[in-house]
Length: 259
Image (cartoon, rainbow, N blue to C red; front, side, top):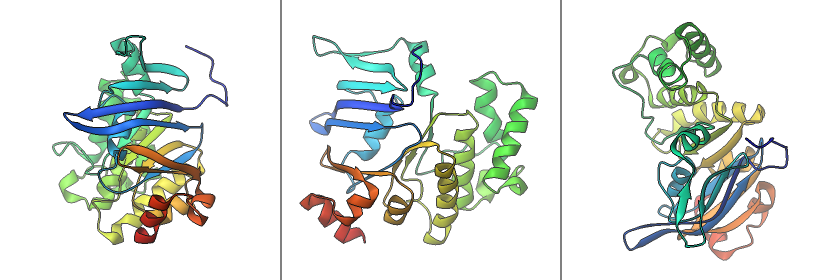
């Protein structure tokens, strides 16, 4: 395992290509995320944002390109143009460096909130139950849901479910958090409580890559904004610069529509 230095990106994706049948979803996308950086990945629906995110932890496999996680190779392309992933155990270890929060929560409906949080640390990471419970209690307090520890997901609001999903991802102590439109399934009044939790993570210098349509969050919290359109990363700029002038006609049109 290489020694981690501050200038090694937590995520380094180079020239990722992915197609589903005849549909080329990613057309050579390159993106780097530094340690402690918050990157907002924005763009119209169908531009490839979620697919790109899912490729970073092998929920989707790429057709070409290279992905490094904290300097270590998850997948590369050989001289014959074939993608070669790290051996299975190594790939699993690298993917566990990332926690992922989905649009539709993906909580286990038959488990209580507390049980949702301790399942993976015990089963996947081999944590003792007492330690997993202690970690889960701490994380539920962090997201303001200690009182819901024994509730089942069906009894929670959408915003509460998403905060539980964030806590569940954090229970594996990831170095990177990936968010796939975490507020798009929520009523507007519930969005704020999830964004507050994400702001707190950003304040703690958690490395975050966030696919989002929340321009306020992107402007206020993200260090960098990356704009995708039709499978390409068109613009990547510091958030302040991007919202002052995205520097690309398509990105400007998107902003004009969203703001």
